[in-house]
Length: 465
Image (cartoon, rainbow, N blue to C red; front, side, top):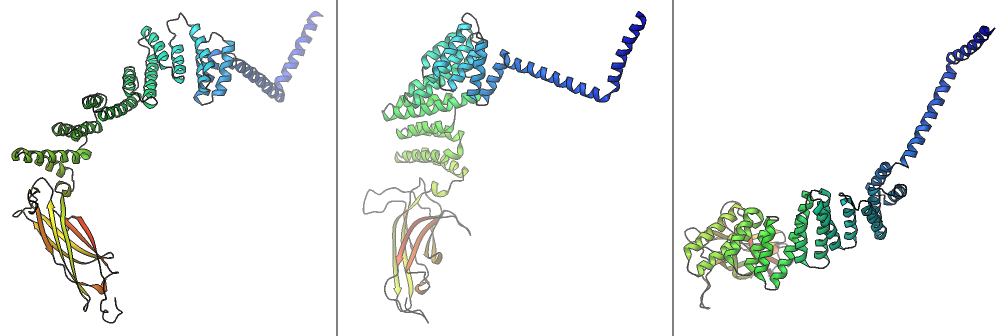
């Protein structure tokens, strides 16, 4: 009987499970239900973990700050420090959030709590670094720098401390320069900041600011007639960046103080650094020096400076009008109208003055009569040739005698038919060229107008003009 009863129970179990596995619908339903239950358990576990694990809360808070969501980060980090009151990094990150939300009082509390947690710990720099940001926000730069320096003495290899010291001294210098206009002290703070620079881009940006401060300070000293001090400041900036603008500034300072020799030295340095922009400045100074030597009858020495100026100007493709400036010292237009025929004849007397540093070996001049947009008459003359160069200007001591370097030319262009003019005004344009050929480069030197007045006989088949 016992044996038979056991067989019946075993048979019942086999019948049930055998039916279950044979029933595909029941198997599918059971599997789905089990999967849902497992997923729910995993989700609940993850949710519990996310809201209780210190490292996860810290990561979420930092991520929200990186996404510029400080209020959401504050909620997460406040949860963190309430559950993990000894979370050093949690207090630091929450302090940074309060700084972002412009609540320095709460920020200071969090940084102080972080510092207290690691009061005797060798690595407490994170709290000091975070505090330094609070001091920067409050413009208490001295206290921030002092605390960072104390930590840095204990951890001189800490890259984050170096970065924090760079920031506090940079911000201190910017405040001194921008708000207090204390450029000497700002420059000192910038120099201290550079001593802690780890990043090239940050360092380069700071150098730009420091050079700007040095430039302004040098100008102040120059205005106060402290020329030597001004030069010392601006020349020292070249240790931080050797560029043509600073070299040019030094050269111009010497020029303003009539130290031509020193100015030329620095213009040459600037030219070597940036020949395209400095060529005109340097050539002008060389010519000025050459003229000074000519005035002292040192012709041979003067020629050396003139030759150097010529080479620079030609290599820079500067217009010859820059190298050989020519001015009109006299211009007279004498019109003559034949009222019977309506024809206008003119004589144009011009005197040109060679203002350059040496004789001009070739120059041609042109006079054009322009009506509207059309040239109605012109005349061209050769003024100087290699055989008969135009001498450089040497002012005459006798007022009744013309200056040396002045040369007169008379133009007599073809007569003009008044009836063909556009209106009653003629423009007279005087130009010069430094080369011969079919298409020379003309430089306008003078412009005048002629008004046609009086009663002119009518044109053939037309009304009176």
